[in-house]
Image (cartoon, each protein chain N blue to C red):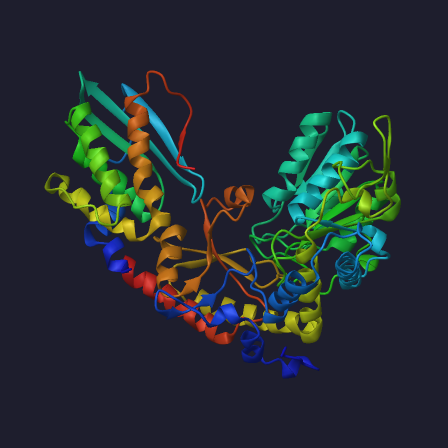
Length: 414
Length: 149
């Protein structure tokens, strides 16, 4: 049974924790303390069961057969699309394209929207805190078209200011691509205002929402961006599934990205006519069980209430920030006033990789490395950081375990 | 797995005070090593006397395992013939990657690194310096940094 809370005050993290069977396991003889949810979150039993139920009873190919199983699979798959639409408040399921994840969604936009439109000298505007997945696809398309990449800087806290954004928007800016929430620093960007600014200069905006959707309400009618990309596995769903939500008029005008089955209406060797949205962008048999799992994850988030999750995580972020700052030599990297529950840090005299190993021996799983954001590491002049990230199932005792394990690291390194 | 097996005294010591740290200038050969997984970067420079490594230095940034391994390696190979170094590398590789490999007596202090075999993701940290040294020794042909990924 899922935990279900009517109000934030009733949020019982222990009950939520019990919905995630994997959290009960031990590593190296210690209870698992999983603080790497920003890399990939765990899945509640309800998501595992939904995928299992589909695989066991209802699997067949979608949009193809007239037989019962194909109809069931199609029904579940299209229901999942509707759940994703509702989750981010998109206008229509025609705007919801299932992808393998955020990375594929961004590549789709880069290749299908940007590549045919960009001219030599046009500008693609990114920010200094982007994940590689929101840098490299644009570099590829810049190489292909002669467009230029411009980067809005950030300050020492990891904040990207609207003034800097405005200053970097020019008459040649065609596309703005930025994170909603930074995976390496936790910074929440003012995406609604960024979209307004960009639109006033005629630029189209893609937002990488991978780190936002598990932590806060995302309302695309309010944000009003042109493309929004996110992944299932960072919001308690399976890997290999994600979504691109795009403005229908833009998607209509874009050529298909990949060719194959499902994305066509008729094929002859002379000419193919493409299917309607969203199928035009879904060539080949899709990740059906992934989509169903993603919908189950949305159901799960809804039973907890995304606002309740947000409030719970913000409380943990506050407690963890305070307690970690007391660890001698610890520096938090990323101190924006508005942050998601992600804490990147370094400790004097202990390389993050050593820290990761020592914490792991204590059962505490954190991410160490460059977090697929090498430019961010360069900016802060560190080769890598350790990163603790919190999710709906994180508990105050997890913070205590982390701080104790950091003490242990100090002990080992003297 | 026991942390004490990985972070032995000699490793912590060489991490804190690396030996033969720096760059030879001029050098007969040098090479860069990079472990993209953790961002470790090493530079090894050396002077040759025939087939003997007369002198060498390393510098760079990395985790305790990679710094200590480079420091211990430099101490161990200084003054040795290419053939002796190749033999040491083979022994080290076996000791660090095979759980049951016996630890040969001639490894000396290098044996302290055998603890990495219980920490598979850390093996690359310990071997980066050796690959970089090999690249420097084979340099006449090679170009570009050596990667462990």
